[in-house]
Length: 419
Image (cartoon, rainbow, N blue to C red; front, side):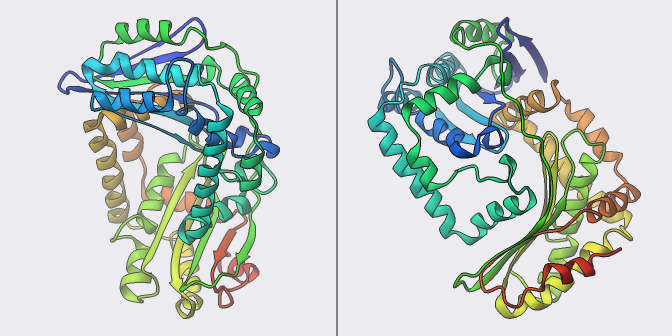
């Protein structure tokens, strides 16, 4: 594995992970701009912009974009998160210049045709409505809003239907001009690629990018609270969580290990106690989400109306127990699962490309697998229980969707979580 990074004069970082044993290249541009950077009045514009980038440029129609990449058997896609937007492709090695040209074109030269905008607004509104209709999808937006109220980090990535419908072509063009600056971007590639060639192509393809970025991030301010929505469903969907850790926190890897042993697989405590022993839920798992300056640690469960009354106290008991005692074999098992995920990802050009881009955006440098595994192996039982106590000292965040009458009050839940 050979990783090289070059910063162009305009501030764009070009990073390559050369893999001589494959025949493909995964490449893309990751932009350090997402939902948390949006003013409330245009919440969802990052995601709408991502959609509109595929709807035509000065020299390609929307069909041209799709046809050119599929003519060579390639794949082109994008996504928006709370902190980033990504445009990426996977192609055979000889077609990397084409993929790079298309991505550079849609980022810099999209025309945002008003008629295309109307159609895509309708599509995104359908996406918003679809998410609303899926309880185990929308519940996480509700949880995010409870954890980070009255701030950008708590607002949905998709935005709201009313806001999406109100966005004009000029609003999108202005947001792109003010946000998509070279200094907030990483062009990453992994696979059969030469670094010097990629740098030369990038310097030519991204010559129109402005270099500096005036964006100021709204700091993450975790608060916690209680949200409940009654809905005629067969199950109660519940997320209970706490203040977590940012990417650069010393406990970042301990957080992953804690999540793994608490609710990360079939051998985890929550799966064994709540599903296997008691049959209280079909789906239950924990997760740790990190941001550049904050994070969340939470548990999701879906349970029947009658079962949820017993589930919540058991869930609280298991969370408290993990602050008191963790066995060495649990830690080893969780570490092994995470280590396997890290090392298995090395076999995929797509995984290596995205990992490289995200590391540069978050840490400003590549993190080798050896370094990541070493930090993971340093996590021990004491560091896991210590982190669990730290997390549990924060105010809880609770989001409940469905027939929630049997779900205990937040004050009652809080009393069960006292150490």
